Image (cartoon, rainbow, N blue to C red; front, side):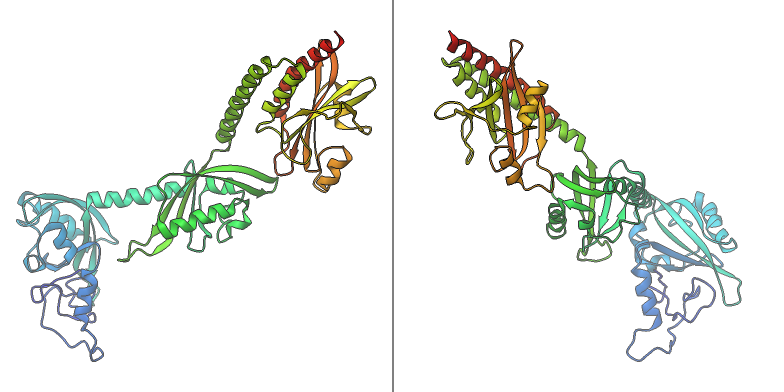
Length: 472
């Protein structure tokens, strides 16, 4: 970052030669080239120093003890427009880089660093070569000679707005990685977390340091393939144009938790290389599980309401009440269950009256050849539903074989979850509806029970009408 009157870029002194007029390796009074005793064929020390100073990102100038400019690098030339040949050798900034009215104050503040310990930070308005003014922030420190006496000052400066931009960037990164209201995880090219903020640590169920360097597969039970695929895509192709919603299952001390994360990704590249070198991926996310579940429930409710409306209109056109009942069940099955069974009370037992096919999907139809007794054993969910006059939900246990569990209960072999809803009309129990789901679907929940009870009430009305019509 230095320049002299003799070279136009830097002093001709080697790094071991120091007259005390500037930073180490720099001279306040430029002299002729000296033999630095280097290895033959290697660049002289002064050329190496020039390359180092000119390659720095900060603007730098240096003054000797008398206030004469001894060094001026390319970044200083870029900021102010004055070349090293024009700047080196001038006394202070007066009349060329600072207004004369401000020159004494600026000189005094800069040169005061020569006797003060540490570095001093100031802000000055300097003049560009084209006459414009630029506000710079300076860091200046004294330089001492070989005898330990003050020998000059060096000053690094940059435009204030550039410094402020840098400070904002640093402050933003620190805020994101500390107390942001969303998760921030930095992963390396091996897809291992290197930085985790507090929100992300809570979401992933671990401490901020305990999560570092661990494979994502140790933290995410299900959904890790989709997450890693997204990270690989960002490393190879860049950030996606919109956030992605990822459903994952986490392994925690309380058990497994299903969560939905709305995620954004940023590819991180080193700013110190000409060609972008990937450093990893910045992954930002928020837990939107509650909102997604509420949205799914609203969609499910709208669909089921629409199905019930369509079912009612279709049933109203059926001349046979039992046909109306099976039509209602066909509409209710859509998206709700895989099978449905209709068992009606006949004396002390239940008889199978209508059902969907056991071996394949299909409509609910009356049992061929008429109603047949349902051979349910004691404690069967359908019998318990009739006894309680309520709804019963049950599922195959984790250790049970689904086929044997279903066969013991006289259900289709693929059944793994069941919901039995009692048929009630005019204060009488007419029978029971059994909805069945396969193992690849979730178990029935409370909202499902409410929907099944609504369907059962409508089916019970149609069955009651069919029985009354038959008696008449």
